[in-house]
Length: 584
Image 1: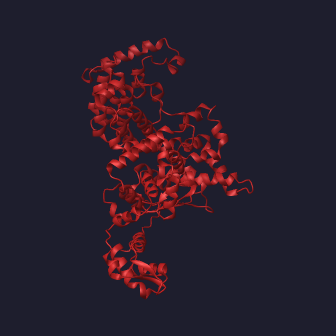
Image 2 (image 1 turned 90 degrees about the horizontal axis):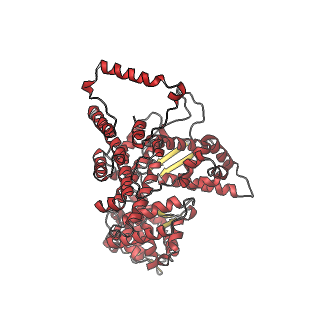
Image 3 (image 1 turned 120 degrees about the horizontal axis):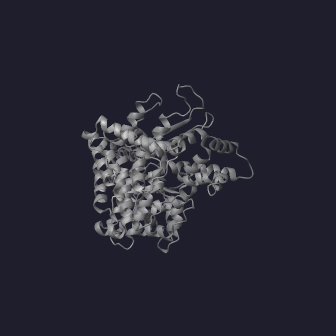
């Protein structure tokens, strides 16, 4: 969900900037803030501000109430960071009994985003969402987009409109050669196309035809079309008409002096045989690599650092890294890369590769060991400069820090920081679960468990191992990964010190068993209750006589109780039995 949240974050940062302008009041910005407060309410604004930090700047009066209002404080991620008291054995905690289900959290988040879109869009000011590289989008983001497009809160149960419809348009691009039949994007698109509430238009974009390539080169060289036709034909053969590849190829011709300016003829000239001799593979990787190798060392180093973060790197990360002596030239290098059109400097200081091929080539400038070293150094520096939980950048920095550490495969074998890395993964996993990003959550849990040695991990960090395995098993249960869930549950059952610490695992196991064999699930549940001292008769022994006997005993117990006693019973003293009762 980070990409979608980031887009909203930039939008609301822009709105906040308009409101700070004292010279002129922007009526549209004020309308958006008013509609958001009306449609979302205080609790909705607090929940969304955990994902979209710039919302906090629009509603300081609401965020100030978080400190004194326990209901709002419980929704604020900054004041609700998971803590783990290592060494305490009993995992059955009362506050977790009342925790909302994963499905409820996901539905609430989808509902709030739908209300948010409804609040900031109108027929006069519609909104357009643009998503690039849909083939890499995670499942939780697809679910959110589906909810925005297919779930309509402005219609009542009878189909009558009682609120303005959401006015937004979605544009998505992807590479169809990377989307096979069973790709998650294929089912996502099929769902949208099969809906009666959304109009889906498919536009297939191939390479440019030869005439367009010739026109592009003719305009760039300021020469007639007839003179550039042979150059265009050779370029077309090398690039198949891909605009980005055409631009990169022509630029390479200039850098290698195959295409050069003639003072004698006062125009660009070339030798067509030399052009055809330039080698270039299908993805232009070799060509781009040669271009990058010609850049100064500090620029290449900046590109290596940026490529470790994927397609873009944020301003807050750049500032933290550039404070280190190792990367003191990072900003200069990124700006130089931007001047070469390798990076694009976007709003709020974010640097983004203009094409994913450039990111891949920049990353591939490093061998495996150098990649691991960069990831580890970046991660450790971000950990050492971690902001306070109340800082708006805390979530972004912490996720980036542990993400880098997780990718530093060969540099995280030592156990010096293993426990710290495991705890950071657990926190990141819990945070991902809160926003219904279960695929990422499972990845964090698995990496966190991997940082702890198998046997020594349970002996030295019992509570941490238990939390990681329980959380991982829960995510697997939500994602219907039964076999993987059983692996984590087996780890719990083999190493947990007492029955109470196994109860959550047994609960997930029984829920999973019920989907395949209800009788086996009931039999397992009864055996657990028996171990807790709550005996139930064998089903074959239950007769009408036994049932009447139990009813009589129950009536005797109730005779001495008032109505108030029945409605407000005493709290169970044993946490393990209370845990089971709350899930019955």
